[in-house]
Image (cartoon, rainbow, N blue to C red; front, side, top):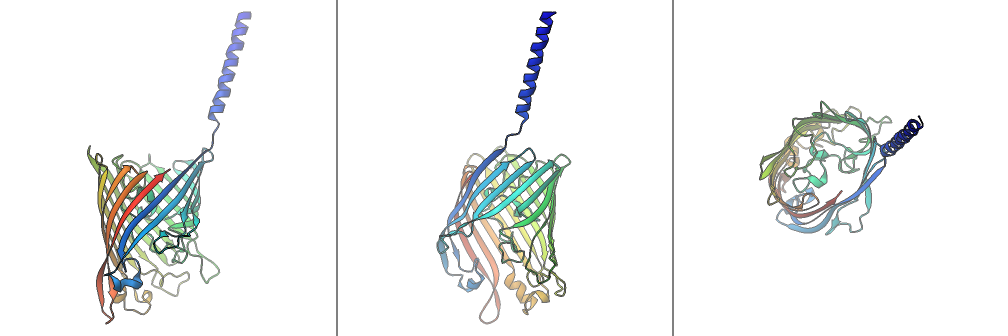
Length: 389
């Protein structure tokens, strides 16, 4: 009997110890990570490529060396359900002819609370877009930069939507259902706040995607890893402004030697055609459609990736949007087409790589005799990326 009691006591103590150790192991330990992203380039572009005031100087080139992005990225898993992401950015690029004393600003400040895979609440200063390219990670782009028309009206506080490089303040929800096949995100954001009216509407943005294969990572290419085929659609609206579009993304190995990437999008955008309505964007955002397509192939052995792209901003304005100019002339002057091509070399994936790119923009130019002629402006970049996160 004594031996049985001793054995029972021993087993009880072992069970208690295991229970305590299990509780210690189950206790969540917060995690924190920090990283950096730097894009710097040397390049040249013809005057008029980005400055409409210099469109008549297409024969002149400007060379530049620029620190384009310099970001500090921080993330913390505060609990099993609470996650925070913060990211800084330069207030302006630093380089030839630019402000060499640019300061640092908070670009992203986002909190996520994950109830489950199918329902996550986000709040703070968040990257907002109805299309895929607007939600891509800057470090994983295939082309040298985002599409030229990705942020046409939400680049800065002075733009119609009064954003900061596509970021807006608000609350959103997102998640994946049907085993990750169907993804959604929707939210309400501040948008434009400088209205004459006392009441100010919110901006609403939504998007839904269907993943036929892997869940889309919102990268420019997966560098031969994974199989992605995603189609999606979304909307963005505030007051009389609205945008709606669809996009498709394919990244798939063709053979053991490499993989192909196809990224395409179409959007319809308008500020409205009735200036009598409240919260009006009709004179700020002309009616238009934007088109985007990029195609690349990644060679796994050589770590090279050639790519090409096409972009088009096709303005189809109505009288109230042109400021007194005929709609035909207004559309010719403000419509643009960009053709681009480049070659990427990945020293170490997205951690270190170098990209050379060429872009050509065609747009209408108002000449001295009052006629409008289409002119072309070129840009060449050699860009280095350093990223660790």
